[in-house]
Image: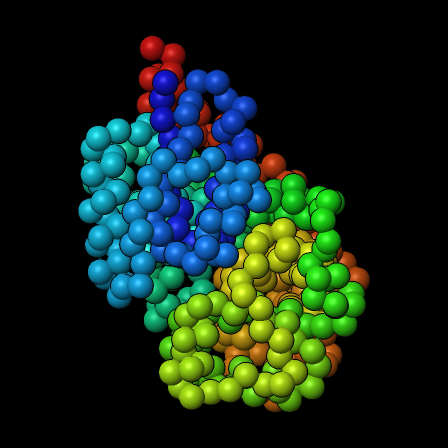
Length: 364
């Protein structure tokens, strides 16, 4: 039985890999396994996803976290390489733009194992972001480039990547949101648990290093929340919590802090929020999938089509701009189909199974 390995380590990757894992489950000739690098080690940011998204337990757990970029990537690379040497997968799938993504891709390509990159072709055009470097390098060493939209396809072509490697399959996050977003929970909803009214709050997330590692930027975001004078629900990333304390900053009284929540609970909170305020790439898209306007607290975004269509607005970390954007957030009348038909994962699996090397091994 041929094996395909997905390398995951962070919240958005768990969601994307869940969609792909469900598509592989329909294939009798291939086993799909997960390697969890441990990049997100908090239980609410990791373990809960495997249970609620019905992802098979990872075959390997590496527990590589809380290190510098170089140390983290190096240790992941070393350990993933050892797994590949022992098991020799037919194909390796990597997702997004984290250190986990880069380590998995480099380990595979150096062993001449085909690499498939899910969410290929995204660019912020800001090379100070470690994620930008990760996604550029990964694209240029991968054999299959699974782009989520036409913007990403154009970027890959502009960089001279071979046409036969590029495939616009749509967005696997859209698959996951369709699968889980309309699920009816048998228990109490998170809105009931928290005593929230639909459209009665703003949902916020803050975790990106460019914001959390800068006292000035993080202070600007918190001041923008304070000035908005509206209820803000903030599931707080552990790193952000630590940085707020380290910088001696305070959380405004109108901000209600939660522990990180699972994917289904997050979708409920997103769908019922008046708007979202975030620095997360994944949450920008989830807001769109849930038909909610989004305020992005960054200076640039990879999802430029959301800005162009009015579903997203870039505000940086200026407190007055954040305040104004929250006050003026409205839902545009048109909802364009940027991200495919909701079967990106099925298209990805079909392309992987069609790789000549894998098809030959399956049929031999």
